[in-house]
Image 1: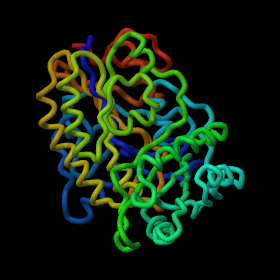
Image 2: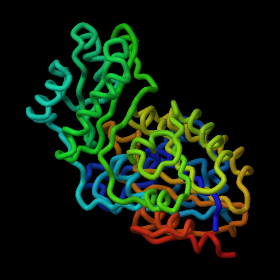
Image 3: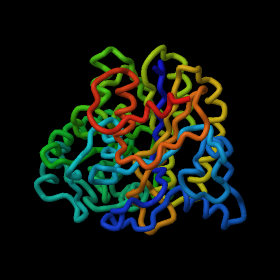
Length: 393
């Protein structure tokens, strides 16, 4: 049906709290609505002309981004059926794996047996073992790390075991090997990700995390990506997609430094693909702006994507499909620095799409996987396809 599909995940770009958000501490979260409101309150207007005409303002009320009378894209929103609100859970559900039980978290820090295993592997006891943000922890413990060589271990409300190390103390490849070994230790504990967090700098005043981050995810259950691979359908990953799915079903991979680099890689991957899927994650909304509560930066990143999108759409042929969604919320206006349990937007566009196609509120992110499965004629795993609504005239 569609020869090429481009699936872009805007990491952390939610569009309103889910009905069960209160149980996650996220009542009232609304990443897109609150970012737009913040910009308006500070005397400006969020300029998203491309996303506006596609129908983003029809999904969620956004100051400066009005609903389109006849949106050019099919528009809707998706609820997360899985338990959790982290990147791994959201991405897995997008690919057709719905989790009934959340990954393990350690809000009181990791137990002694995990730290003992780390010490045996690293040869030194770690610093930290606390719940903290990445920028705060290297500012607080980075100088002690430089003096002692002891890696910094920390976590968050998400299911992550994060290891920070200065690149001159522990080179990235050495840090990756430490993470690989800890991945094996943590599999029985059901920790979602082990994350390498290299940084540089000479003191707390100028420590800076580098682009050499690498995620080591727990092996996912069956995915639509596996089905595509079995049928010889190419899947090109951009950004952290390769890490989240442990390379499963991925034909080729383009790492990315940031959103700008990721957008360049999406275009390159698309141009080189004859048939199949380009699956991309743009991470800056989450990593640089949501977690750091940088509302202005979040708004700027949305506008940069909107500008790029306006140049990308004309590249799509009649048998190409673009899907834009997110994996969770990360509302920078709420208290705390963590993800938020939210609906995610869904925009679908191709050049021959009938205007004003409403996709409604979908019961699960896995509707994306079902749509991919139907399009490429592979076995579905979960969800309800909306492909037919995209083909209706």
